[in-house]
Image (cartoon, rainbow, N blue to C red):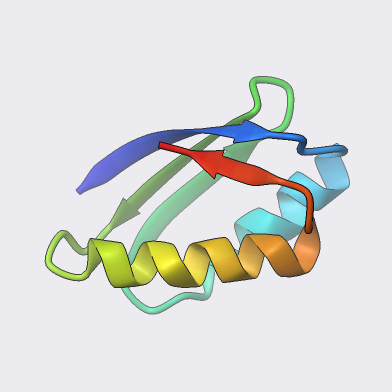
Length: 72
């Protein structure tokens, strides 16, 4: 399953890169792209466990950029 999300308060391109790397390491994530300029994130992951994977994605993003919000 592939989904796009809007990001709010992502402050820098370096943080976007760190978020992308952290998300890519999560089990079940097939592909991820975090675009700082567009404030967008695209995740391709296992459809059956997508909600559980997204919980891990949110935690990983908060570690890198605590103020960033993922909007569905």
